[in-house]
Length: 105
Image 1 (cartoon, rainbow, N blue to C red):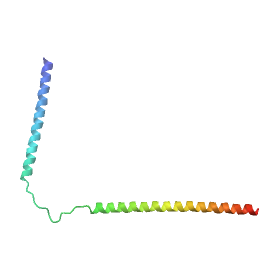
Image 2 (image 1 turned 30 degrees about the vertical axis):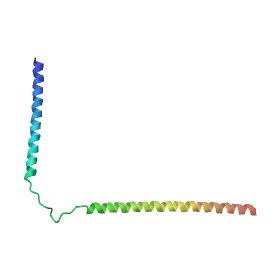
Image 3 (image 1 turned 90 degrees about the vertical axis):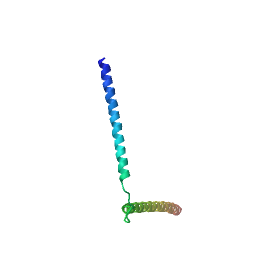
Image 4 (image 1 turned 180 degrees about the horizontal axis):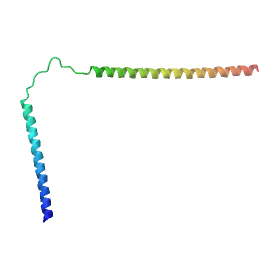
């Protein structure tokens, strides 16, 4: 019997908390609705600006850095290709010099 009463008390307390919470939410919504309806709206000022100048400048700087890195990588690739070509040329020259030296004895 005592356990049943404890269960009933807990159940009623939970129901009361739920009811109070719903009531609080409803009152809050009504208060917000009244504030919104009571607000007077005006037109925008002529000085309405969007502060994106700094962000735009930062983005342009990042794009410039990105292009610079692409140019640097391209330049490095060209230098490596030039070195490879020089290596092939020097190998060919070295081989020809050895062939001439073998011919001359």
